[in-house]
Length: 163
Image (cartoon, rainbow, N blue to C red):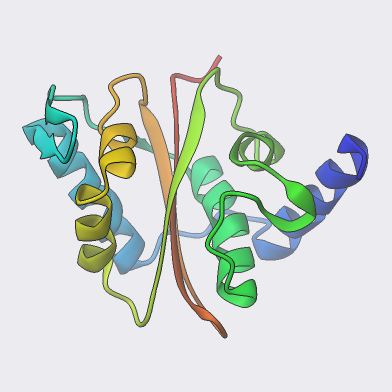
């Protein structure tokens, strides 16, 4: 699929999901609050040792929209992947919502029911996820938790300082 087609698919999905950015749910706010707690206190990541204290993240509606695009895809498809509808990547989805940053990543989890702490504990016990969620270059984030037909998807999109 050509990049133009992929971007069109993402843009249409973003517009359908939320034209005006709505306030985050309590669970999504809890997830970001818990992530900021981990970052500002420091943590031992499996296989990586003690991670340096990182600054708190600025919550962003644009990041939350990008997270929502992937969470809807995961919840409806059951796919636990960073590849989204039409082959999109985290950076493409973030750009489609207005995030313009050099570094963009996302962390994902699939579970049952709404339990932000279960997602956080899974990420903290995963060497790769623990490392990236505590990486100091990231300054902005948004989260989405979507209960879909195939499970509950948790997605956090993180980025460096916007350009």
